[in-house]
Length: 427
Ligand code: PLP
Image (cartoon, rainbow, N blue to C red):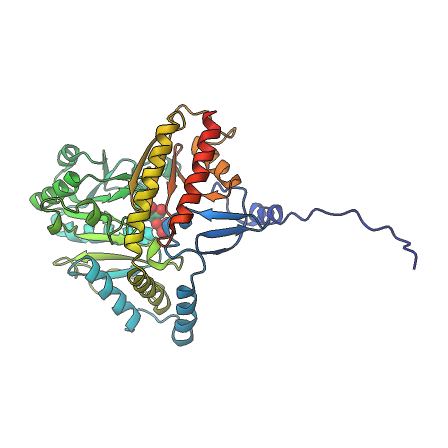
């Protein structure tokens, strides 16, 4: 039969634009997002909705510890959800008790409280510190410049970066900032109101800066001397990313006195649930019962589902020796990146970090690769075009926070792409 109506012109179906439009209309625009809409993943691979494939060295900002869609997590979610997804914290259940026991075994004698995120874990540390100093009228917590502790009102007051605080004044009182890795500054900042010092073992959002062994040991001594709690935010740098469960354990390896080091409390999240939202804080004895009945709580924290996933992740990390993998492939990647930095010093100024927490510092005077964007965001976009995902930090740092099961051939591929982009910018 003869067509009476001519066929309509081909319409280019742009799913990325459609998803972006949904966000523009309906999602509060707090995030600066890249022009990529993701569809699915497998291991360290991600695909966007156009079918483009990426190697993911960003790991969802240190979250996807076993990669994307790992069978172990899927199966645990299915199995546990058939038994029990949620019960209120008025009751006991095995997964929460077992997970707390596993974390205590990995850190040291103490107890755990479970949250849903990193910032909630830090809120727990703030409350612990206030409770500790309450009867003496002490409440002030010292934190570091360039630190990042999350986005609640107290956590932005704790964070040592002005950009997160702007527009939300007045700040929650009781936080004072000192330069990181400066023990003398810590000592000088202590006032009669000081109750705790909180630092990240490796600053993440601040640009991947590890604490020095002297700083950690010195802070411990200072806190003992002044009766302060030493609090560590391990939300980003923890969970075997450095090759040991906690970054301080790695930083202090082989350092005299390091084997006895323990902070008084540690916040955790991100990799703990591998993508399932769960956080925790651990508190050392004799402070583990300071937060007594009725003093703190959460509806969802420590659910059977979240705890079962976190337990499975610990089991897989142990069985597949993923801490060793992070240490070994991380060291190989870091040394490869240092070679690239030596070859293209006008593009890469330095490389720092430990294991699978690496920072590439781009040269300060590099022309931004993309107009109107920071050097780091422009560089990340060039990497995207070449099929690699990373995480910018600030204006000049590119972070690599991959899955702990990243393979050597994948690391080689990532390094090749970074070198190609660096060479192009150096030309
Ligand atoms: N602490 C550190 C060191 C972090 O890197 C982050 C998040 O990036 C947080 C706390 C906040 O964690 P969340 O985003 O899960 O609240």
